[in-house]
Length: 77
Image 1 (cartoon, rainbow, N blue to C red):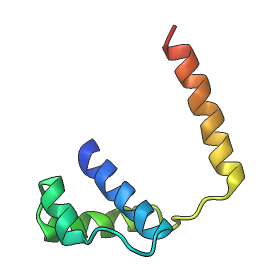
Image 2: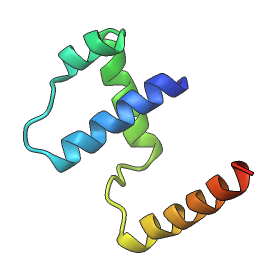
Image 3: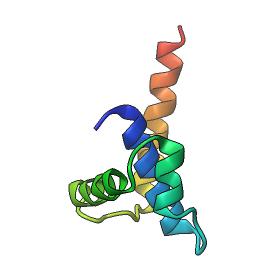
Image 4: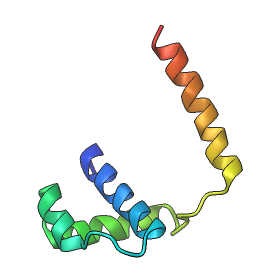
């Protein structure tokens, strides 16, 4: 799975988790330049890889945010 596909499928799953009405897989596949079948496979594989744990607690998000900010501050020097 390349970065573009990973980004597409992770954002789509996040959107499905947060909102009641989302873009359907068929339309996203057209926009993303993949087949609907491939998008479904990518979504299934991504969810399996994260053990279907799509909810993260606030402490975990803050942990990664803190490390991301630190990384960005030292990489921009």
